Every structure is written in C-alpha cells, then in structure tokens.
Image 1 (cartoon, helix red, strand yellow):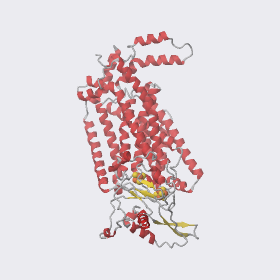
Image 2 (cartoon, chains in turn red, brown):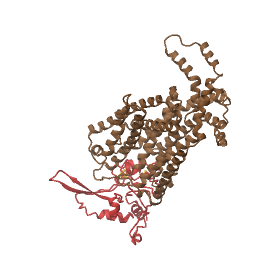
Image 3 (cartoon, helix red, strand yellow):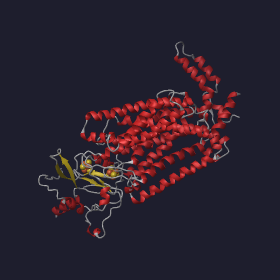
Image 4 (cartoon, protein in one colour):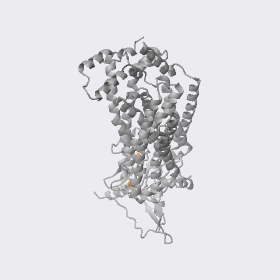
Length: 163
Length: 469
Ligand code: SF4
Ligand code: SF4
C-alpha cells in the first residue's frame, strides 16, 4: 500500500514559522507561554529548530522545521507497553490518547525527541476555547501527544473523494 | 543438657524484640510515619495537579522516579539472591543472616513498583497494562519479571519463617490467633520437616534465575532504545552487578543496625560482617571493571552524540554526581575494605553507606544525562528535582525502614530454628563433609546409617523444636 510522506524544501523555507502556527491552531495545541518555555515544557508537534553550522568566524545560523518523521520502523511504537502509539497501514504513526498511561517511554525512545507530554491540564487564554478545531480532540492531563499527520484532514478528503 | 540451655537462650534473646518494645521504638515509628505522611501529601499534590509539579521537562522525561525504581529494584537483589546462593552452597555462616537479607528483598521491591506508579502520568489507567499489554515492550518484561520475583521471594521468605511462627504461637503470649493462622498447622513432625526442607531448596534454586532476570530486564528498558550511552550490550550484566553490589551494602547497614539496636552481637558476629565485607570488596572490583569497560568503549568509539553525554558526566553539568559516584563506589570502599586493618565494623558501615549513596548516584547518572543530551544536537535540557520528588524519595526510604522495623517486631529477624539446627547438627555434618573432600576412602554406607541413627529418624532436627520442654 502507498505510504504517506511529507517533503519540506529547505531551499525555499524562510523560517517564517507560519507552518508552526498553523499546526498549533489546526491541532488544538495549547498555547506556548514564557513560563512553560523556561521549564522546557511547551508542546509543539512541529517546531523550528535553530542550529549553528561551521566554525567561527564563518558561522551560519540555520532553522529547520521538524515534524514527527513517521518513521518506517518507529522505535516509539516498539516500546509502548499498551499499544497506545501505533502505525497505520499507510505509514502514519498515530497516538491513542485515551489509552496512553503516561509512562513516557515512547518520548525517551524517539530518536528525534518529537513527542510531547501534557504536564498539566491543557489551558487556553480566555475566549480562545471558542476557536478550537472541532475535528481534533483536546488532550488531557498526563498523556503523551504527537503529530498525527493531520489524519482528520485526510479522512475528510477521503470522504469527499468517495461521494 | 547444654544444648537445651543454649536453645532456651536463643529463644529468649531472639524473641525479646517481639516480647518487649522500648520507648525508642515508638519514637522511631512516629518519626518515620511523619515522613511517610508527608510523602503522601506530596503524592496527592502531584495526583491532583499532574506531573508538572515535578522538575521533569522535555527532553528529560525521566528523573528521580525512574532512578528510584532502578535503585530499589537493585537493592532488592541482594537479599534473596545472597540467601539462596548461601543456602545452596551450604555455607554454614548463613544461618543468622538469611532472614534479614530476605526481608530487605520483599520490603524494598514494593518501592520499586511504587516508583513506577509515581512516574505514570495516568496511574488510573494502570489496568491498561493487562488489558492491552504488548510483550514487545521492555516495560512489560519488567512487569512480568518483577511480579514473579515478588511472589517468589515472598514465598521464599515465608517458608523458612513457618517453624519460627509456630514457635511464637506456642511461646509468645501475644497475637496468638495471628501466628496460629500463619503457622499453617505446623507441628514439627518429621514429615513436615522433610517437606519444608525440600520446598526451601527448590525455591532457593528457582529464585536465582528470576533474580538475575529482574535486573537484566530493568537494564533492557534503557538498552533497548537507541539513545546515546543507553544502547549498550553490557547493560544487563552491568546492572545485575550493580544491583548485587548495592544490595550487599544495604544488607550490611541493616544488619549493623539490627545488631546495635537489639544487642545481637552474639548472633550477628564480626565474622559475618567480615565475610560480607570481603564479598562487598569483590563486588566493588567487579563493578569498577564494568564501569571502566562501559566508559572506555564509549570514549574510544568517540561518536559525537555519545561524547556529548560522556563529557556532560565527566566535566559537564553532571560532574558532581559522576565524581561523587566514583568517590562513593570506588575510592571509599577500596580504602576501607581492601585491607584487614581498615575493615572494621565502622569501616564497613561507612563504606556500605557510601556505596548505597553512590549506587543511587550511578542510577541517576545513567538515566538523566542521556535524556538531557538527546541525539539531535539542538534540544538540551536541565533537570532539577522539585520538592515533590525529594519528598517522595525521602518517603520511600522512611516507609521501607518503617516496614523493616515493624517486621522485627512481629517476627524474629534471626532465624531461630536455623540457629538451633546449626548448633545441633552442623558441626558433625560439616566434619563429615570435609572428610569426603580428603583423600582416602569415602565414608561407607554403614557409617552413614550410623550417623543418621544418631539423630531423629529421616530428618533429624524434628523433635527438639516444637513440643520439646
Ligand atoms: S515519534 Fe519519533 S520515533 Fe515515533 S514515528 Fe515520530 S519521529 Fe519516529
Ligand atoms: S507514554 Fe503513552 S504512548 Fe508513550 S509509551 Fe507510554 S503508554 Fe505508550
């Protein structure tokens, strides 16, 4: 069966981070704030990673958008004791939030460190709950979440194609 | 008869902690309970608000709790394993130390399990492990192996307790119904003795592979991932060695405390500590050897991601913990244990305390630096435990000590019947055994029957314990 993949053309990327904001909005990811950022606890499914190349004085700052790689043979799935993270026949690595026991084994096993944990009950600034995306469940305290490759959009597109 | 008098004295001294409780006992219990109560407050705080109240973050997803888990499971190793090995090898000096060792195992293993529960984001979903359990996950191997180990070592603690429980049922006025139930109708008939001995020896053999497997799979939780300095083939044996090492140290501390509090100098003698001290020194060297191999291979391989972790331990932010571990697990034990002059009671207790601390640091140094320096070179984490994690660590220790103290008040901490058995038979048995090692004719069948007849039929120790005046 065909497998899904995502290509990001780094030559064209200007690091504007619009994709990051779009991902946060689409997937009901709680807002990042300075306090949780200082603690290293912000949740990002897609994140802009800064890194420095080459030696001084020829250093170059690079930015790299990094989603979940939806690995072919994902280590995060291997280690989950309850099967709360699974791979679909089309190669999308998903997360069953309602089953996850929050052991955070998958987060430590992922070589890209892309999974996030809900340290507290997710919260939004007042009024923002009205703009949550109804197609995506809001996660709860104590579970791990990750990029789903927007499978809800995929589902919609499929329905459209069928009718 | 001399023997009868000696038996009486054994019973009197060893049952004394059960018969009378000093005021200090109540003070200790009160203090320990206070710490435990505080830990419960901390845990409920965490349960209400979420794991955010800890110092964990991304990428340091595991911290104190997992360190405690590995540490406590490690401590639990010594008891059952040492007792089983000593029983199987018929080491006569085991008699007065097996019980205190086995109790450590059973009590401490609960805190290993509890540490995992504390670490879960959703402890309410713990049953999912049974409902949806996947055996591909090393965590499930842990669950299985630890459950078997807990069951096996509890049985292994209980079986040799039965004759002593029966003795207490008959001789200690207190809690008669309790001991009657637990004694399972033990009368001390030759048939019962025969069965008991058989089951104990089967269990002693059974628990050894289980014990080894437990710590191996604990190490596999780390080794099965691809993270730098976790993905190591020697982690299995390295963890087992570390576990036995810390376990013996904990045993020495516990025995020293028991001896001091209950004045058992006559039972937990210097020779016991000396023997354990030598064993501890052997484990020091073995542990050093494994640590050295582990770090040397990493250093020579010099993979950048591995070296990140390596330097963070040697000169970086985890330097204090790393060199603290070297001091506690190598320098102090070598100074105190390697020569006879320094291997005094005090020296051994100091080095055992150091090793216990050092091995906790070792577990920490394995878990945290790797997570703080993940494979991709952009995410760096720092980890500082919060008051909740510190309280729960203190709570685990206090709870363990509390359970141990209470055990000594309900059951004799030195096995009475094994001491009696030793007094009565061991000397002649060992003498006979040594004869078989020597050149010359092995003892004939006639000799053997003669020796058997000297005791009580079949299993000779039957009659003197229960029902004797
Ligand atoms: S979470 Fe990590 S390991 Fe799992 S599929 Fe994504 S990138 Fe791969
Ligand atoms: S945190 Fe959840 S998804 Fe990850 S391994 Fe544990 S149970 Fe599975």
